[in-house]
Amino acid sequence: MAQFRQPARLLATELACLRGDRSVFTGLSFAVGAGQALMVNGPNGAGKSSLLRLIAGLVRIEAGQLVLEGGNPEATPGEQAHYLGHQDALKPSLSVIENLDFWVRYLGGGMTGTGAALDTVGLSRILNLPAAYLSAGQRRRLSIARLIAVARPVWLLDEPTSALDATAQAMLAGLMRQHLANGGMILAATHGPIGLDGAKELRLGGAP
Amino acid sequence: MTALANIFLRDMRLSVRLGGGALIGVLFFLIVVTLMPFAIGPDLALLARIGPAILWLGALLASLLALDRLIAADYEDGSLDLILMARVPLELSLASKALAHWLTTGLPLVIAAPLLGLLLNLDPTATGAVALTLLAGTPALTFIGLIGASLTVALRRGGLLIAVLVLPLAVPVLIFGVAASNAAIVGPVPFGTPFTILCALTLMSAVVGPFAAAAALRHGLE
Image (cartoon, rainbow over all chains, first blue to last red; front, side, top):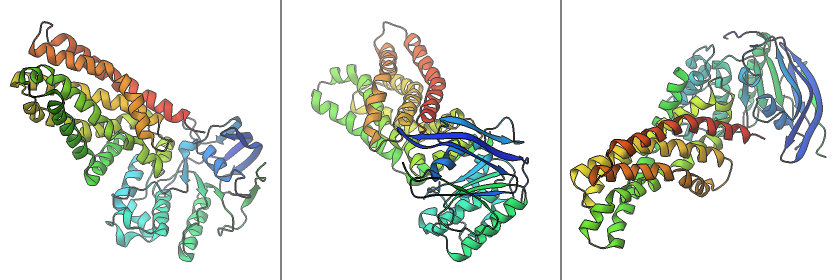
């Protein structure tokens, strides 16, 4: 797996998030060190997805600070993170390999080769199939291939196991362990276990 | 640079594969231009006189058609999130997208214009002048449209709103496009004067458009 500049930890202090006029959370502080995973859980509407999107730089930070210590000082935390959201960011009319190739070239950074990444997620036999014909699980696998083809220290995973079968869940757990072993960080919003032992937990409260 | 070339090539490839965009624009252009003689009547001298204006109006309206997919397609499938997170400056990514969009939807209009000129009894000089002004002016329409597309990205049925937002901003382009065409045909102003202003409008919108669009997208985060 390709290497990246190793950040020491992701530090959040007193974060607040506002969606619309509703305060989703306030005064949220946590730290994730290199090689650590943080499971964000809580009931629906508690702000799990909002927190991940906020770290990704897709939602404005209303108050508080977010720093990636030891990371690239010229890039925002979001620019050093992968975001695996509910949408797969795939174009139906492009083939599997074209979709992945585009993101790898566009996102830049070190890459291990798209072929190897597709092999890892088990899509190497349908390289030229248009993404329109992929099942939900296969689309998810293709998005996961993006995480390993472009090296970025922080992974933001929003319910990463949804639509994945048991084999794919085990594959994802293996990839996450490898990412942590390389000194990466993972923040995952989940409702259940995703196969990482010893991960810290961050519980977001219920909707006010 | 590779990243920008990539997003440009991807958008070109997408619009070629999906088809439709360019063809629908050209067909709409054809229909608008064909309707005019029916509305105005078979007065050839009159048609030749207002021909450039009709072609410009047709191209302006046709260029609006595909705008709603320019950013919204990326928004709906989550690609926009990743584009916002990339280290590539958003402004440059948007400019690349706009360029690809112009090549696949604007340029076909420019190519179709001389053929449609025949329907309006335009002589070769007038046809050439209109095609040249469209070539110089339609990029401005795309870049102005980029702003509208970014502002309305999160709205359902934003396409209609884009037209309302973009058309007033496109008025200067229309004025100088038609003025330059008419200058070439009847004078008395030299062709160069309005044409240079038209080129300036295009260059200006090529700079302002991506920045305004990027600001709109960033502001739209919440």
